[in-house]
Amino acid sequence: MSTRPRPATSRARKSSQQKPNAGTAGETAGAFDLANRQADPLTGQILVAMPTLTDPNFAQTVILICAHGAEGAMGIILNRSLERPNFEGLLQQLDITPRPPERDIRLCAGGPVENVRGFVVHTLDWIAESTLRVDEGLGLTTSLDILKVVAQGQGPRACLLALGYAGWGPGQLETEFGQNSWLTVQADEALVFEGDNETRWRRAMQKLHVDPALLSLTAGHA
Image (cartoon, rainbow, N blue to C red; front, side, top):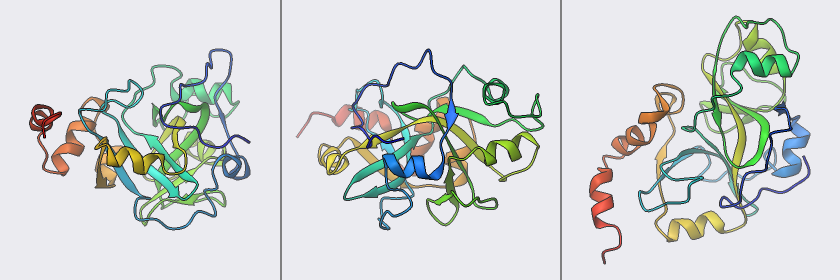
């Protein structure tokens, strides 16, 4: 993958004729230098969209920031469900056996950039050479190896598969913070992996001890 991350507000590519695929570590680094990025306090944090953020791509989203630095930021949206394909259908497209898999994992729409490329967010009890350590407990892997071991009923204790990612250009995410578009909360396994997507945004707000209704009432007032 040779393109740099697109702004978060960019439209998703049309992908009806494309099959989901998993990239290699080198391909991912071509789009965003994950392996060589500098440690940043925002990396490993979760963005929680403010009620005033109305962009349909990002309204009420919960996003794990996997990399952030001078070149921009890259994250995975955690609470947008995918109806198709399911995990078994994806394995069939990638010619990975066994089918049906011995283990199922949740799929989500990770963002509007490269939305047919697979990114697996997972706990660090399983790692590959291509795994990016997001923080002390979470990793991001783009190789097919992780899908193969999960299909065999093995692999990390907890994981999810995202198609696509959210990307910000240099300084763009900082600008959006200045516009009060996002709150941040420390990532934890419960918020990343557990529960349903319909409640994930509200659960993230609750972790911050924030009432979204009060934020909506005060929006636009000095």
